[in-house]
Length: 278
Image 1 (cartoon, rainbow, N blue to C red):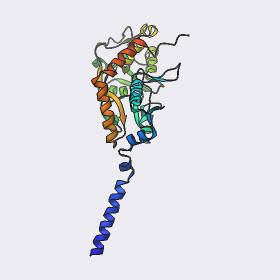
Image 2 (cartoon, one colour):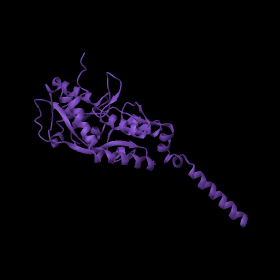
Image 3 (cartoon, rainbow, N blue to C red):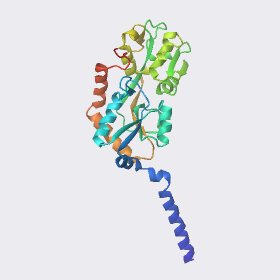
Image 4 (spheres, rainbow, N blue to C red):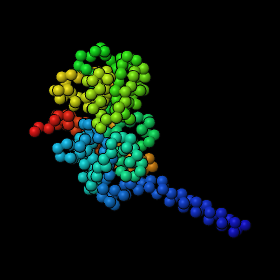
């Protein structure tokens, strides 16, 4: 009986020890320790203009999120290492594979995404709007007018805008296309393939600062953003210490209004849609 009890206790002990050294448990809080040990923060950087983009002239990553990442890594005294990925789908896979520590672009919350990644405290919120032809041939007045079988909406495939359009405007025809950068979907408006292109409002504002674009395109619903949602970074589930650390940083950014100020500064001082002067 005693031997049986000892043997049972030993088996249970080994099971507990095995659980403690299972991959999920071993890696749960290892990310922050790894970053401190290696001196590198690896960041998946799916490009989102104007939040995070590669400067064509310098090859450097620029935008609001790039500034926030550099501020963080400088403060941490570690190196910021961008991990280039084609889009958010690729970023999710790369994050899950452990090839980056966080998705550092302007990732906008929705429930399907939150089932896959753990959003940190948001830096702010982003609304969306539309680009349409300047003469407004469909006489659109409010976002609800898009919910019609007579309207064709174009979005970037796999984007937050695609999910929002399908959810808010189920009666409309939805054209989801894969493009290197989301702003390229506006070409479908110019060609007449679609009536509106759904994009983040800040992107529409920047794009319309270019005179050639404003000559034929317009924001569909000025002052009537829709689909507002928190935006920020995301990490893997099961890393509570790392999330607490990043949440505290985001709180610091929000307390000092840094992200909002950066968006306004970028709007005034540079525009990635303007062609570089020769």
